[in-house]
Image (cartoon, rainbow, N blue to C red; front, side, top):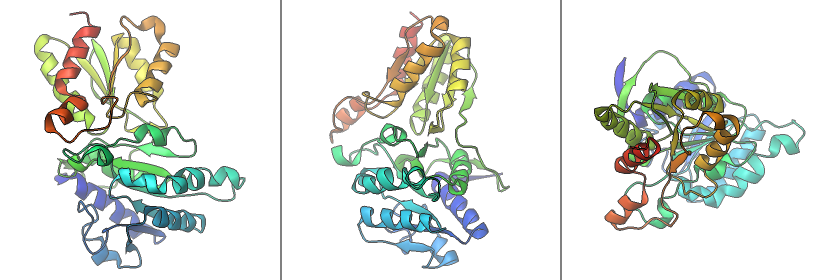
Length: 325
C-alpha cells in the first residue's frame, strides 16, 4: 500500500485499463502534451502515444461527438472536459446521442464511453465556472453517474466505468486532485451503484458524495464531542442510487440529512427525500433535512462563496435540529 494523490489515482486507472484494452483512448483539451489541465493524465502520452492520448481544440461538442461515434464503432473512449461547466456545450451529444443510442437502435449499438472531469466550485471562479450538474445528468435515463470522494474510490470506480458498456459521467473535483490516500497497487475495482457506509452511528444518518464528504466527515468528528454518533454514507454513484443502504440506515437511526453541492430544486436530495418518505416514513423521528448550495448563481466574493456552499457549521446545526437539541 502506498499513498498517492487523487490525480495520480485517476491516471493509474486509465493507464491500467489502456494496457489491457487497445480500444481505449483519451481525448480532451490539454490531456496530452500538457499532461492534463490538472495533471490527471501525466505520463500517458509518453506511454501510449498521440494516437491514443489526443489533444483537441476548444470544441467540446466536436470531440464529444467524435467520442460517441467512436464508441458506436467498437472503441472505448474517455472524454475529458476541462470542467463540467464546459460540458453544456456538448450536452446534446451526451443526452441525445450517448444516452439514447442503445434504445433508439434497438440494442444494436452499445456506447461504452466515459465523460470525466472536475465538477462544482473551486474557489473564486465565478458563476459560470462553479456549477454542479450532478443531478442534471443523473436525471437522464441511459447514463450512469459516478462521483468519487477519495483517491481509492476514484481509481476503483473509474476502472469500473471504463469497463462498463454504457455511457458514464464521471465527476471529480478540482479541489480534490491533490488529496492523498492509501491506494493498493493490486488490481481492484469498485462496483457502480453500491454506496459505502464510511462510519457507523445510531443517532442520525448523513448521506453525501464527492468533496462534500470531507465536510460531512469533519462535522461528524466534531459531533462526537457532544456524544452524537453519525452514520455517514458515501453514495459514490448518483445513477443508480443505492436506496437500499440508505433505507436500512434510516431504519436504524430514525433521522436523515442529505448534503450536496447542487442547487436545491430537483436535486439528488429531493429524490432521496421522496424515497425515504415512501419506504421508511414510519421509522422517522424527525423530518428529512437537506443542505444544498444556495439557490442562486455562485458569487466571486470569498465571503459569498462561503455562504453559498454547505459548511461544517451548517451540518452540525442541522444535526442538532433534527435531534431537537
